[in-house]
Image (cartoon, rainbow, N blue to C red):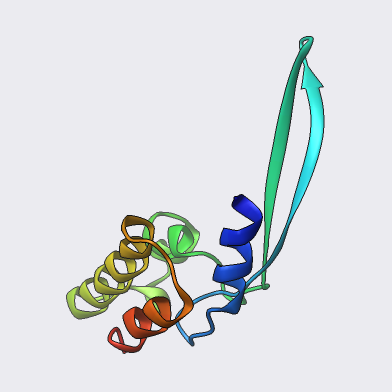
Length: 102
């Protein structure tokens, strides 16, 4: 099932979304318990993560300070992105959601 979701998310292309390239699954064991590790592979994004801008060194740098309007825009984009997890994903629905964000 996760492979189908990765394929669907990989097909979504939008300027506000870092592309999902694929996934790696590894059967591992820790302390005698069998587990499956899943790693998602994303495009490289210059400039750091959103976490860096909100809480890390980037946030302390006045060049990267976010004003209220920028924070609200980020919140709007995040909620649109999270809404994909709340509905059955189809490519047309995902594209429709993201086209309304810009």
